[in-house]
Each structure stands twice: as C-alpha cells, then as structure tokens.
Image (cartoon, rainbow, N blue to C red; front, top):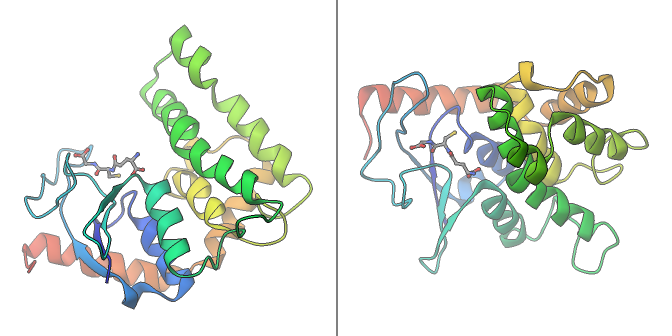
Length: 209
Ligand SMILES: N[C@@H](CCC(=O)N[C@@H](CS)C(=O)NCC(=O)O)C(=O)O
C-alpha cells in the first residue's frame, strides 16, 4: 500500500480530496505529519521522509519517494486505473498533462509572487502573471464546465485548489469563480473537514504513531 505523508490544511489536502473522490482513501496509508507554517506554528516532522520535510510526499509500494503534488496526483490516478484523467491516446491527454505541469511550473510561482508582492522583470519574463493565468483558465472554461471539457479531472482538483484555500488570490472572473465552486462541490466537504480536524487533533496532541 502506498504511504502518503499529509499535514491538514496544506497542499497535501488536495491529494486527500482526490483520494476521497476516487473512493481510495482506505487504499493508501496516510501518515499525519507536522510542517512549519507561515504563521510560525508547526515544525519539521522527523517522521516525514521528504528531503525537505514538505508535504505531500508519497512512498510507493516499491519504496520510491515521489515529491510534488502534480506528480503524486498523476501517479495515484494511474495506480487506481485513471478514474479522473484521459487515457494514453485520448485527445485530451495532452491538455491534461499541460495543466498538471502548468500548475507547478507557472501557477505556483505566479501565486507566490503575487501574494508576496514580488515584481521583477525576470519573474514576468519567465512565468508571466495573474492576468495570463486568468486568460488561460478562461479560455478553457468559456466553452465547458471543467478544464478538459464536460468531465472533472485531476487537473481541476489541482488547479482549483489554491483558489479554494486563498479565495482572495482568485482572478476577478465569474467563469473562474463558478468553476472553483463547481470543483469544490464535487468533494464531500464535511468528510474532508472531519478528516482534517482529526489530523489537526493528532498533531496538537502529538498523538502520532
Ligand atoms: N510544489 C510543492 C510544494 C510543497 C510545499 O511547499 N508544501 C508545504 C505545505 S503547504 C510545506 O510542506 N511546507 C513546509 C516547509 O516548507 O517546510 C507541491 O505542490 O508539492
């Protein structure tokens, strides 16, 4: 069974959301770990094997460590027969891969620059900015409810997640706002909240195996 290192209300929460959507939360061992938080709480957890103590981190059945949310989400979707991604050879496979890599390679740095107030020509030259991100999302969403068309994919779960956690970073766009709500509504919010609360309690009590 793969092992997922997860900290509640963090970037690994989107992997938990994916597992819940797939009905596979029980097929992965989830280890709750602490991480340092921006507000100064939390700390690096010695039990987390991620080379920098980050989450998410996945150890496969073969003992291989996978880092980066996009890689972990692609891997888990594939391990469980791709319920939320186009199969090899399907027309939307390329768009799916584009969104998964765009999330880590463009969206994340652009969001970090935006909320940190960083403005440097090299950042704009390399990644562009929030207006280009908004234009990219809108061009996919103006004809369909999800990024790949009429069905939810892992790309929606990953790309929408920063805006679910930080709605103030969401571009001013009804198309994007409605898509973020639509994606959020697919996940059982109560079950996810209960899971996160339980994980938070374990960390608070340091009641971790
Ligand atoms: N690009 C990575 C980012 C991982 C990341 O920065 N995770 C945060 C949690 S939201 C973390 O573990 N922070 C603890 C630290 O930086 O030590 C991914 O998406 O997997």
